[in-house]
Length: 460
Ligand code: HEM
Image (cartoon, rainbow, N blue to C red; front, side, top):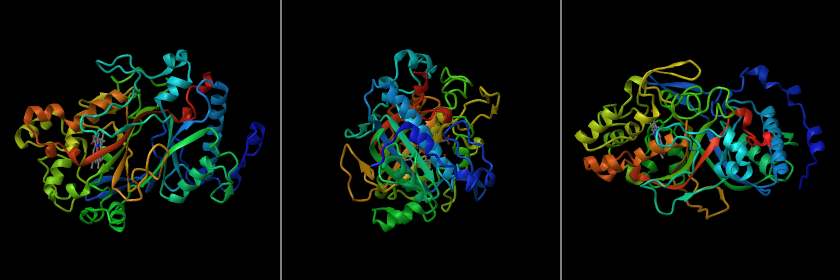
């Protein structure tokens, strides 16, 4: 068991840059946000630009080990997490070949561990009509089509790791959370261990890469996987990392677009975002009973005519569907696609100037998805429930936008209760919601990079 004295920790750092200075190999300045991923490349899929996201992903959720009222311990935890992350980032560069680590915080962290005077002053607040003044991160609700057994989680902290190399993620997880001696890329880790600060509640691993869902699904004998089109990046067959379907730059931050929160450039949480995390099991057999055109309609909208072999469907601003088209599709076709359920809320409805003075064209997406597939059932490790060894196709949905209120509006549209009533839509004509079985949900605040370690604790 490794024990730490603060002085020892401070003295024990090593200077990896003296061995290999990655910043000289790839001069990438760390972004102000945690969610922007430097070094992501693009592929051309028959004229449609697609982001090649890191292949391997893992989420580690946890609660803090010390009592909520122990503010000294919180200040120590902040320093320890800062040192741990910086040690890992000295070894692995901030790019897909190295590692990305995003750290988000659950509401319990802000409610229970910080004085009200502090959160009153600093927490981002919604300015959306009807929710003005509420924190811009609120508890997740149960959605109408969620199964009754869905768990609303209350983790205090969530780490999201991404890398093209699974071993980098495994090394980082071992070094951070396991007390035995650990190494990072062969170098003994001395500052990375924070396992005495947090109690890990789950470890969730997965992948996002061309043909991976089919390969994994078939090898593990998941029913329906044999029908996944070859080359698909996700279980449902279509690409979901279109350049034009993912928010660019800092568009998902609390402060960037007018109308969502009271944050401004320079606010403590500027560069932060409201993050939703859910685990969604997929009924592949049912999905692939639909023919290709039925799947295209349900994923996008019923007027699409893309050829059968097209997995990446044009998502440029000009292709955006707004509310009028969605309503017209519901009336005419008695069916709406997932993409059109979302887009009138995930994209700007008019040419807009951001808080940073940038012009954003009507139809530009500002919600960011970093979801990935998994075959774990439900997780690799879960302290509060049972883990089954039977593989199951699922998605870890990680989505980021300007407020949890905005997310709630958008996610409610996936269930489209109102629209279904008005147009008499059958359950399996409402996007693909009918084949989803969501097991876990939680809203988090993902702070800007500068405050990724125990936000606000330095102000105690
Ligand atoms: C669980 C399975 C899910 C799958 C397989 C899935 C798949 C997709 C695909 C293929 C697209 C279109 C391609 C693209 O824009 O790159 C898309 C768009 C989108 N999805 Fe999902 N999705 C899932 C769940 C969700 C959830 C839970 C939300 C939360 C509300 C969501 C929000 C969105 C949004 C906002 C867009 C449109 C972005 C835009 O073009 O403006 N998705 N999804």
